[in-house]
Length: 425
Image (cartoon, rainbow, N blue to C red):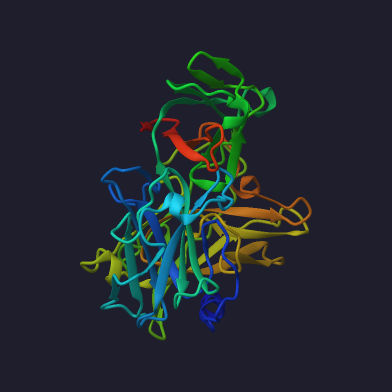
């Protein structure tokens, strides 16, 4: 019975790669169903956050796969954005010291795989695209040089480091939430004058590089000489959530972590995971995770990029629906924590069971289950995963400065920290 359901879901998920007529948005988004495994990170470390220093030797690595295989005419450009990810009202001449767009010419075909695909990759900055100011940027990939044919939009950051950010993770100051939430306190140390910190500075805090968790700080609790302190009792509280679930498909020759079965059907690879249960009751269980990340790996071959297989992965969650009006999703950085038909789970009310099939590239994956309440328009993981202040999470703080009279926001400070380890620039 499970294999029949799995095969039906697989057929639905791969049917008809239709052309998408959507318009670009300034968010991490894939516009065509044949595009998979989008990666964007600082080239110094795989799957690190896509943050690089301005005018340095650092680069951003960006790549994706096209399941239509063959060769497509993909072009790309980058656009500068405000702290709120709206397109900056400036000319490309203000933020680019080179051309406005370029064609992606670095591509390779898959080999020794059941499903054929083409792997595309670029590095930024390069000889064609050279940003010259710090800030938020969106990389936009489109087909045939036509920006009305969007393929991918991907956020990345260029840091013009001008100040330091000191931060800590602590328990929530709200008594009722001390066992469930984590609070971020931070201080901005600057050496240059900031005439109006309530207007000129914006500090954005994010959990696990999940854009759904963003909190924007515009008012410091204290303004001191060369210091802005953000430790208000009622701000920067985040649900601790739970450690991520995970599975391991680095090899398809044996069943590794959380893999129940692997079989091939009509030249496709199908993976069935063990059924998951809700984690809302009981004590917190500490386990190692990658804070929602994923890594493309293939230990059966020599090249992760072109020899890793594409798999149809069946997720199953044994849990009743939290409310009559809502939907469940499986999320992680592999799909930018977003809700789409591809990661939406079907619900069997008789069995009290959610299940869904997602096409993923072979490797290591963190994931969790989220519930979208159609009445409150809120998506949260607590109904399935619980929330614990002990959970190890990473937090990102981005500080933006708009000089008096300036027409754009500059990213002038950044830090990445967790409950256990701090990684500051």
